Length: 108
Image (cartoon, rainbow, N blue to C red; front, side, top):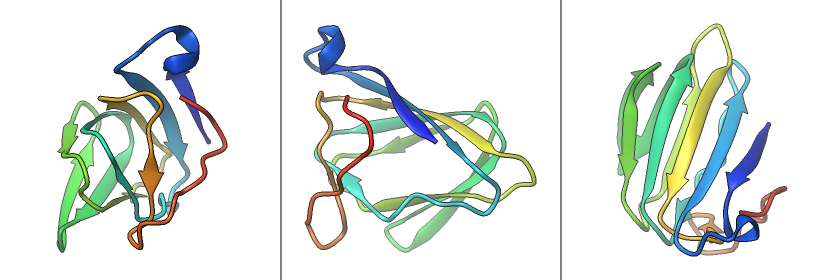
């Protein structure tokens, strides 16, 4: 489950905030954004796969994902992974690795 907490619809011009919950074993599709992203982990355990490397993280960790970098986030623990994404744009354009647009079920 994911949804936008704040974005263009709230009057923001350069920032979006999303919250996402990934069930154990779930993952985002591999994707990238046309802006910088900072991910704050609130609970659970995850892995971010980017540039051929894997970084494990948990509660109270911060991930920095520069603009245009393909990445995928996995929930790897026994409880749901709870994350907040902060983006340097609104709306946030999200693309698959092949460059096609990834349509999201929410708007920022």
